[in-house]
Image 1 (tube, one colour):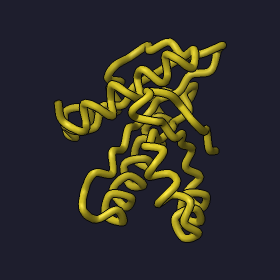
Image 2: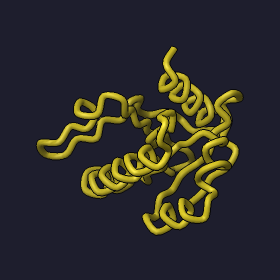
Image 3: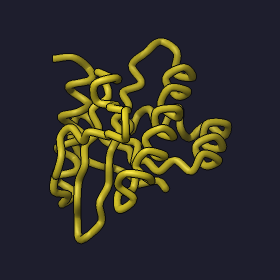
Amino acid sequence: MSAKDIYHAAVKSALIKDNWTISSNPYLIQCEDIDLAADIADARPIAAEREGQKIVVEIECFVGRALMLDFHQAVGRYKLYQMLLEKTAPEYELYLAIDDIIYENFFRRDGIDFLARSNQIKFFAVNIDEGAIVQWIS
């Protein structure tokens, strides 16, 4: 099983353990002539609902050799999804799901924290081995 599949399964399991109902897996973001699920093959956002709250989750693995490049791409994808969701499904909030180790070792760096906050990125950290959400950050 690829790393992307392992992360996807762990995030889905973590959301279910946190009492979310998976409503779309994957969630297709379509707007006019844009179809992100077809254009970005490795991006498989999930839609979930809990007590009236609806979220779309973009899972980022950060398995590349260059974490800054992975971060740059994640921010770009997040902002793109955010703009399209505002137009097509404003009832959904967008969250980025990341590994708790990446959160501790990369996202908590002052510069990365500044960039994530400046871009108003909402995310949560998942313990991939346990398939459990360890922290929500927004």
